[in-house]
Length: 135
Image (cartoon, rainbow, N blue to C red; front, side, top):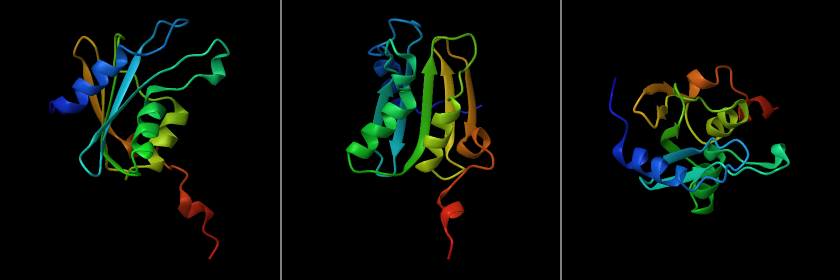
């Protein structure tokens, strides 16, 4: 198993500490390496009206897009859990919007466990803009 990108691991670990999770107390951090090489991080932000919260992956994507990038080449997600936590279904689709299928995604725990996968493995048969092309 390959070692996680140290810059992504550091960024995701650091931003995880800023997560706003007063209800679940389940803090998650995510980091993406943009096509430019820049690192973008995000954390989960809960809301008392649960559906109104945002996931760490969505926060990292928003930071990337706000900086003017729309493609990433690697992702990492970290949480304090017994096993690496995969992105939720909505975040899998969000990740697929901004990356090729072979882009690596490393899922980590705060205790050092890790699982390496890819965008395509997380979301096989993804819905894409190709499905909307009627020409």
